[in-house]
Length: 367
Image (cartoon, rainbow, N blue to C red):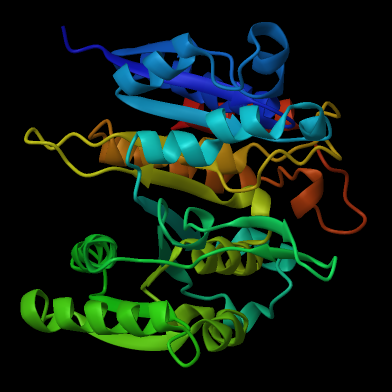
């Protein structure tokens, strides 16, 4: 009666490799911690298009709408150009996010001492780094219209996109960030480009107005996105919660990844609004994408996907103790020297994707 359905979409590129390891971890919790989960895998991406003529087959779409949570691998790859653009748009990840109303994307950045040498930043900058980027996920320039490529009268081609936000969209994501900050240090940094963009002016005004009206206990500051990018590599420990729009959140989280040692270390959660019972539509995925240059080589880092499972345990399955247990197991595996190629120090031998998954499972067994 209490069994929860988890839809697993391995997707493209390294997605199937890292998702396999994340699934092994979920299966461990089912077996050892009596987690009542049903794990079902569904086709999505290039292989789904080849087999079914759709990037997002109807059965997969129905499954993700019915699921308690989604574990996702990656989309896109070297054969992406072989899929018609119309098919990619109709079933792509932006469509999935919008169809499920996943407006809030959380990307935690937490440094692990064992990986200090893997970071491009000096060790003294990494102590105490623990912040979350809250990215608005279903608005902004990625969805704004008009957009397109046109040929002008003089024969030149012009590409154009529209950055657009409404007050309600801004206040929805800002409220999420303020509420999250109340569970942390109580500090929010709102990032925009209000000095040159009207959409940025509105963003800043609405975030400030919401804070003043409903969250006076939260410390709020505003940064322009270019300054924020600099601050992320100058003094990342200063941040607690960063809230920003779709494109800026996409860019800043990749920049911030180097504090964690590698993009392969970053998990994420994409969440919808809570219903009357407190349940949210939720999709969990590593930040790194499909990485087609290393796909099939068995060398991808599965820790971003595995740590996404920890976020699922905490945010969708109400198992904070299990989430903490998994995070400790990842830390212990790294302390013991387990390293995939992206986080391996010079002169040391990296392990494979599956070996890293096995290292985490060994630490879970020891816990």
